[in-house]
Length: 364
Ligand code: SAM
Ligand code: DTB
Ligand code: SF4
Image (cartoon, rainbow, N blue to C red; front, side, top):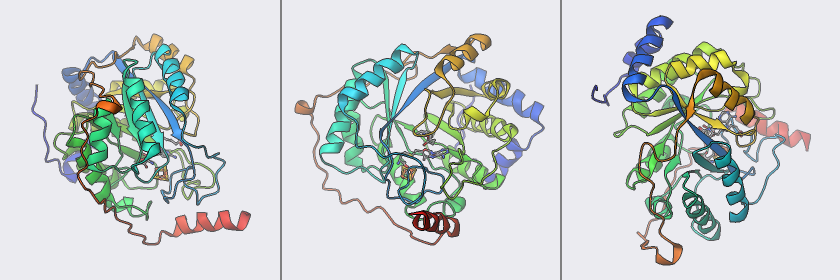
């Protein structure tokens, strides 16, 4: 098996991305087979444990409070509600629950303690637990690890250059810092991004440079196609063509051979044949469940029918890495590191974000 390369350049990645499709597919599928069982797909269920009302201005996100979307905000779910949803996901064939919160960053306190209890509860159901809660400090990552967290999702979302054109309230550097904080624990890193936000192919390659030069590379990489939600600054963005998704997946597979590449947002727009080409190109994970966080996703029954047609099997939990231990809250050895998080706030002006915010004001 070839060694993992950590010094990919934008040009090398572009050369792969732009190959004739037959060569690209062949190369990606070959690498896929060397590192993974091509007939197994990992199934994750998303759970929005705290929806809407977010302070950030991420141009793609329906949960940003400043835009006029139809998302109904909710308080943090209870541990009991989360357990019931996790059991439902497990019976539907899911091996992982990914809990998302519309937060800029984690704040120590009651709500975080409640999330830690959710992590303990799901780990004890013998499912992989993932969280995506925004930026975390080293201390917070350690506490999540102690609770039994399997993965932390924190996307780079785009190239460093294009990131500035989509988000003004947080910086790309902070995203890297959070990933670094998670890396100091035994929690696996899940990091990817979005295509279809108006970025150039060079930006897609730039994002893949940033991901593939992490050492170690992320254990999983979600590739989202933008879901253009009314009221967000990106509401008028044209949907990507399927070939862009296929090229993105294949390139990710080639440069990050061990990573689980996840077909994420945007599957409702893809045909079964399109998704099949993505699986052939090296995608080996999906988000299942009738809803992503706030937007629709294919029906679980349709996904299971697709698996049957294609002869795909859902991956069992802890196939890639052993189940983490859960340390009970009372026995936690957590020690304060005396951190004072200094997350940046770039606050440069993004015209279309300002415009979307204005539209909200004028409709109130
Ligand atoms: N608030 C946390 C954060 O931003 O890190 C976690 C939740 S956030 C919704 C998780 C990821 O969802 C984002 O980084 C982005 O990649 C993805 N996402 C959000 N809205 C999306 C959309 N409309 N289309 C595609 N992906 C989206
Ligand atoms: C990821 O990369 N995609 C998921 C998960 N990680 C958290 C979220 C997709 C959200 C799509 C828009 C929504 O449903 O609100
Ligand atoms: Fe908030 Fe995360 Fe949405 Fe940005 S992507 S607005 S941080 S929920």
